[in-house]
Image 1 (cartoon, rainbow, N blue to C red):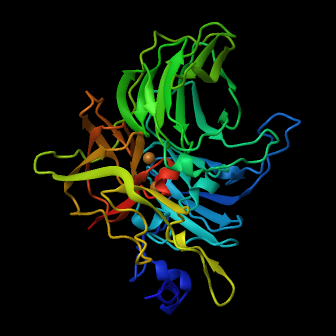
Image 2: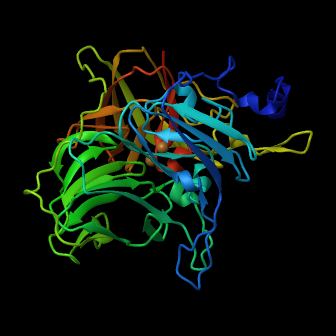
Image 3: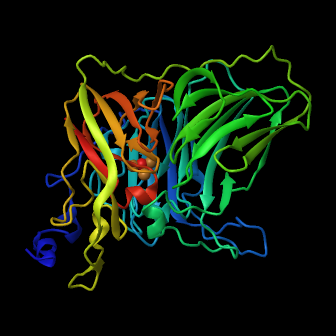
Length: 476
Ligand code: C2O
Ligand code: CU
């Protein structure tokens, strides 16, 4: 069958010809009457911002507006109404939250895209406190690359309050000297370790200085929201402890350095200097010369505090994988057997252009594969079959086998896994939703497949994701 015929023959809205769900999308429970609801409204649009110093002009940064940092209490529901004022469709994916499939924000897999001028309300109750973020899941290279991302903090994991609780959202802008966006992706980048930016910021500022109470207990929630960069996060001038990985409490562990790929988060705790004016530095050691990312400067009279011993966060309520009798699944990361070009865009009778790659907003080429499969399978313009089917309630051990010369941060939706092993040496067992797999590494993660639905499993170097290193698993 010709391409056009395949797409146009379907009844109903043309875009549904790509739908994964002939029987419709999943549904999710609504908040019960009297539920405690945190209501926010997100408006996705460009809001020009002075990122570079003058004479550079303002940059047309995409954002969600005032609610781009959401703080809520554990136990509350979130109702986040998104209004799309972009020029193309979007959705919101709540990265790291174990929510009902219908709220996962993956276009064509869990919902229709939200078209310009349209709205969609996301409603769910985060099962765990922690540090999360949210971002689009379609044409992500453009939308996330131009800034569209927000932070979701679910409070309630502290056993002892901190004197300061800071968010450090890291990214690297692909921006030209005049302030305009530069090239967000190149074939060369997409086919190797990604296209890098040239202006690294924390909370949209280059090397900001945060004031913190002298001798106070400081919590820093660090999020690597860049599409490409790896970071070896460390701290100078104070002894710091890791207290949560991807938002999940970790027995406090001294921080030497922690390698973080895109989408990974690390919560750290340290004691601020005694003397006002003294600084602690947050560093990136994944560079020829270590790069300071941000500084924390003590201010005021020192707080009276006993010697610093970090208090552990409350243990998250995540089912412990049972390795005995677990289902083993291998996930092989490779280059695509041959780079493929997607078929050309289609012009519909009404003049509208339908991008061939729109089923999940791919770029024009395929460079990568998971278990030999790329996305989409070009012959049939449908979602590819799932990478695997998992029985609900069972433990799954995924061995991610990286046969490429590049590291890949692999992310699973809807579940939190435990990193349990690697052929490259010992790993610190920890809960995560994204884990960085080195070249030639075989890394094992385990989780209880307790959340029914179709869940994306992909690399979070967005150019890899959008050029084939993406698939999904089904839990039923
Ligand atoms: Cu943060 Cu499917 O991604
Ligand atoms: Cu990758």
